[in-house]
Length: 90
Image 1 (cartoon, one colour):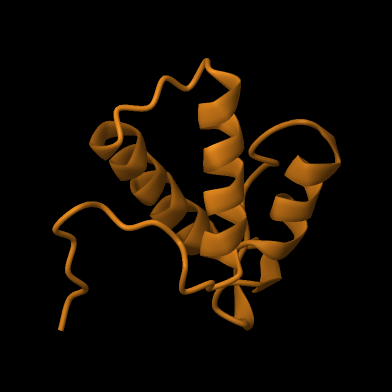
Image 2 (cartoon, rainbow, N blue to C red):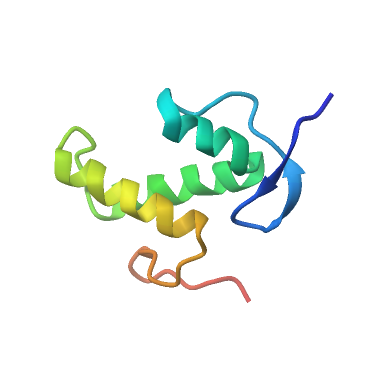
């Protein structure tokens, strides 16, 4: 049976993740409050940021940047970084 969560990004009940995306309290928070669709969209956006900005994910500064961007993404913050030349679909 599908597990439903109230997705903090979409502000509606949606299919939840199958498991916490990482260990600890933060992983549990995402498991409880983020939909599978929103998480997949974040993974795509994160990959774009890593590639576009040539981030080394092993560097603490890059990790901090991605954590900040992840929070902005799920909170629908308009200041979330976009890839250079990125244009939203019409």
